[in-house]
Each structure stands twice: as structure tokens, then as C-alpha cells.
Amino acid sequence: MKIDYIKCHGSGNEFVMVDNLKHNLEGIDLAEFARFVCDRNHAVGGDGVLLLVQKGDMYGMRMFNPDGSEAEMCGNGIRCVARLAEEKVGKREFEMFSGGNIYGIVRAEDIYPAMPTYGVDLQVRLSSDDFGFAEGGNSFIRKPITRLDGELLWTAINVGNPHIVAEVEDIDYDHLTQLGERVTELKEEFPKGINVSLVKVLDRNRIFVATYERGAGITASCGTAMTSSATAMALNNRIDYGATIEVENRGGAVRCICHKEGALHTQLIGNASYISHGIVEAENGSFRFEELGRYNEEIELYNDFLRAKNA
Image 1 (spheres, rainbow, N blue to C red):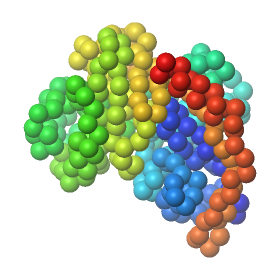
Image 2 (tube, rainbow, N blue to C red; image 1 turned 120 degrees about the horizontal axis):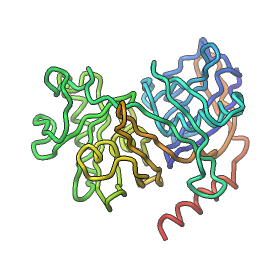
Image 3 (tube, one colour; image 1 turned 60 degrees about the vertical axis):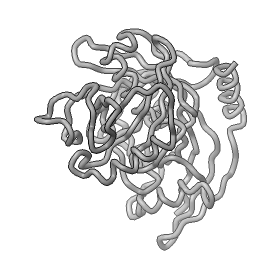
Image 4 (tube, rainbow, N blue to C red; image 1 turned 90 degrees about the vertical axis):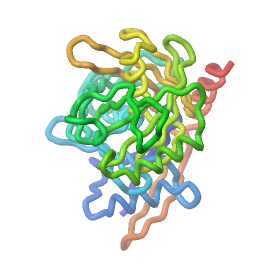
């Protein structure tokens, strides 16, 4: 079987995307497929695999981490899948599903001229079975998780997948790695693992986020982590509800708008850019890949965006 792929990214968070409507991957070991194609040394390379899928009249996403585990949601990934789905839906506003939840999608105002930009609306839950450290399923805002770290104050957020967020004066990536690895040892507090983010507030409505992603480690960017981090800072009165929040990371930047009217929800707005395309050939449980071309104009456009942000 020859499987067409597009390598894409949202805010520097890179994925290998496959249209599962075109290629029926039934019979393919998707965990092994993800482990193969995400290998940056021997294959396409990426922070996960995205599949465009369909149920009835609605399109959706399945996402697999580089270790082969399946994630409930990916904020950067669903924007890329939304770009592919928009071609089939034929309208700028629609809904998509992922991990059992439904998300509102909109083709948004470009965050940089001519850069494909999408917004996804994420409902926020402050209690979850994933938060074993929160007694009685209560919300957990600016509190210590003693067995994880004795000093940091954490806020727990679920936007389709679980996150903990702590504000720091400076980002220490070695410490972040230690925290992410420690989570895997604390099964009582984190029964399904969790995404760990450290946030530096740069200005009233501007933050920098670094994340250790469950199943992937430290990546250049994590969309749901940026959403959760912006929401946590709003809950902690460090940014403003209803304002457009500039959320920066090592991969680039997105915008978030936190809303508290009705149910708490946050909109994540950012690019969905293509890098390259090719094929993966699957035969007898093994894989090989071939890159067929690159989207040089989109690559340069995103580089222009980064240069403008850093000017």
C-alpha cells in the first residue's frame, strides 16, 4: 500500500498528515506507523501523526504521538486537519470531532498576510478524572502538587486532553524535562499522564509557554498547552478575559481569546502550514518513505512571520 502524506505544522509543531478517506488504513498498525514516520533520523520526522477521518456528515481527527500512543486532542494538529477538511466541507465555519468531543472551527483572519489561519474553540473543564491530585474532583487553581514539585503552584485544565500549568520567572527546560518525566512515575496523581507547561508572563496580554507533551517530550509548540496556559493565566488574573492574547513559544506564536460568559472556553487561533509531501509504502508490517516535493513558498512565508515576530 502506498500512502500519500503531507508534512505540516501549526506554530512549529510538526506532523505527518494522512487523508484516511483517501487511504483506508484498516489493517495498518497505526502505533507502529506513527513511530516510524515521526523518526527524524530515518523517516519523515514529526511530533505526531494526524488522520482526517469521517463519521456521518462530520469530519474529524485522530492523532498519534511519536511513541505510538493516541491523544484525545491536539490544538495545533486540528488546525492542520481543518485545512484539509475545509476543501471537502466547502465553507469557512464548520465542526470537527476529536477524542469524543466536538470543536467549532473557523477559517480565521490571517495572523500574517497570506498565511492559512484557523481558529478552534475549546471548551474548558476545571475538573477531570485525569487529575488524581485534586480531591473530590474539585477545581485545582494555583496549588502545589507536593510529590511533583514542592514550590511551583499549578493550575489544572482539561481542553479535551489534560494539562497542568505553572507560572515561572524564567523557563528552565532541564527542569521542565524532569517534571515531565516525573509525571510518568506518579500514577496516583496522574493516572493517564499529563501535559506539563511552564509559563512566563511577558506583558499583560502576552505570555511565553514551554511544554513537555505526554508521549512526545518537549516540542517546539503544543496548541492545547498554549490554550490551557492562556486560560490558567486568565483564571489567575494575569491576563484579561475577552482580550486577544499573544502566546509565544519556541516554534512561533498563536493567539488565544479566553471567554468566561456561559461555559468557560478559549479560542486558539494560528497557522496551518504545509512543509512537504510524499508517500509512505507499507508492506508486510514494514515501512519506507519517499519525499516527492516541498512547499517552499509556505516555508519561506512562515520564516518571514518568525523574522517579523523577532524584529
